[in-house]
Length: 420
Image (cartoon, rainbow, N blue to C red; front, side, top):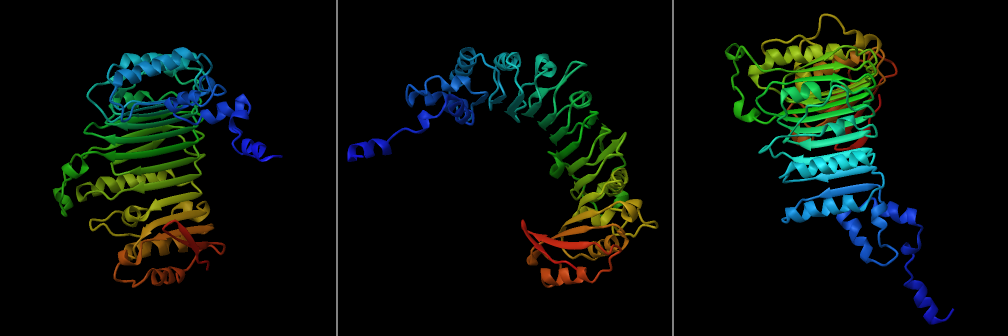
């Protein structure tokens, strides 16, 4: 091969020689405006983007809103193939009629996954079109919004398997309706920043297997009642309610700094629970203790339980007292005697109540297989322990009720095991 042939071989465009299906697959990972621009690469690429199963429109940093609307309109008119994934991110919603039209077009083209992000703007309130709720092809719905209310028809989400809702200041009517009739739903995630309205979340999903909740109060710092005397606490404290009817539920993941009641109509299939209840103000202690105790009782059948140490040390399993200290229960919970196999304790600092609680769990857990302990850095340890290793050695001296139990210490995402 002469030098000229070698040069041509080196500069040969091998990507453009790939089959159409491969090029379409490559383009499907691009945001749509960049996918369209691939047409200028060569005549080989012209029009390839129109066959991409995914459409991804984002108007961030876009000053020309009219131009963005025109671009989306033209793209949807140009293509008529089925849509696998439709993503729409609008920082400035403006005229919602365009969005209605785009969503209806995606539904007509048998969309499987819809991802809507309208940010936290609450200047105007909109409702999603009924066609989205009735879409038979829709399997995944993700919504991030502070401007959408939900008033779905009675029959909805016939094929939806995944629902991920990130909401800013949702209203009660929407929360009672949105999750209350999901016949095919298997995964539900609710992330919400709550305002001053008390909410009732109603979840009814016969096929639901995983349920995640992240609930936070937007005004907590401003409205906290600071008092060390619980007798001075307000008599009425707002509590949020979750009514859950999910007979096949296997995993729950709860992270909240808001007082919440969780009512499970049927939790017999529950296997794993991850509960992180952020520290509450002193004025909420009595109510918080009741909510936490009821929640732990509801998940007592699980085999894998993860609890945040900073709240568990005061309330879990024990009886709440006025001085908010660990109090050993009069009777060992059934889950520790016959069911609980895995426990994870996070953020241990070596406080006396934390150590008493850990000692109790190790001693009474008759079928425990693994206890994972996440400790803080040396500088965050209480003065009782000079180093993290000293705290670990103390834990290693605790008697274990299960001969097969192994204690593992984890820190900063780097797993270090110490078996005993």
